[in-house]
Image 1 (cartoon, rainbow, N blue to C red):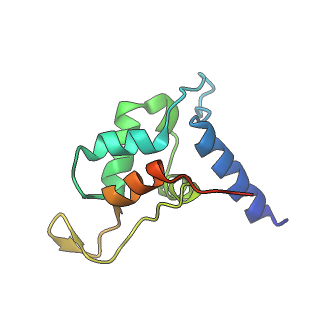
Image 2: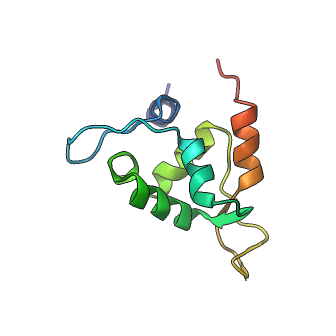
Length: 114
């Protein structure tokens, strides 16, 4: 197992556990990532990934406050939700975005892992 494999496994475990340690050691706040993403997407089909992460940090800083874009992308990948770049979002091309349909599918059909 490579270091990257170990990191990916650890990120998946953290995401499935639904909590992340805070950077300042003040504790953890249990959360369900996909439910939180659905909430901050507020019924919009395509939302820029940066906007979702910003809203997660604003709403639940003890859980997501230390996350960067790579942390967010890795946590979504653990649920087999990809950040997309094709198509248009917010009237612009080339934006990174998340599909509400992908998140809903991941919630309804959890990935089976070894």
